Image (cartoon, rainbow, N blue to C red; front, side, top):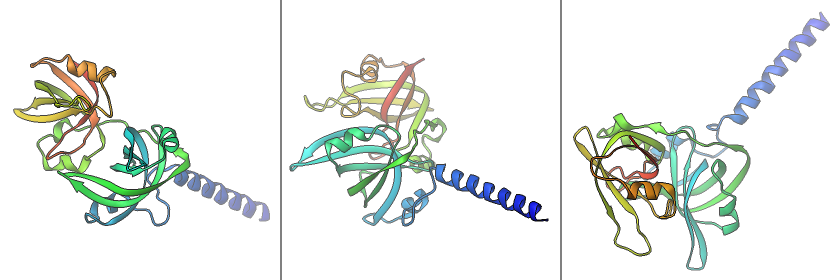
Length: 236
């Protein structure tokens, strides 16, 4: 009887260890006091928010009023968070490779439809990494559901190029790409700070012609509507 009881206890202990291991590896399990993405999405603008998220790409770092600030695209398994001009040392910015986990405390803000976190502080969390796969949002274009995926890494397939233009600035030569799908037009962007003129995606988009059909990947940024920040383009 004692042997049976010991075996049962060992079995229960093993299950507990497995369960704890699964929880530890679950990218959506949050620490105490940290919001789920659902709670973050429901929070009012200007509310203080605390999140745990993973770096997907870095848009920029520069010094503002003598303080380094970073703008970063981040995501967990449920949604995405855009960190805007977060005070950050260059040393830490360099450490924030794709997949790096961050704990961030700041304030939820909005600019021209883009929801972001501002006035943030951060902590780099060791031990877990996560890099998202693009979610196909092609069929969400033109629907109210699309905004629920704001800032996530996404793909849009079978887009037809309508026109290409450049921001009129020597220091900020963004490419604005107008595409059409199912009779509606959408404005996408090659954000210079994210992918500058020396990158393959910038060169590929610059060479496109009206009428080209393309598949696009990028972050579902918002500027008075979807304004995807392009990270990859494939010409059909």
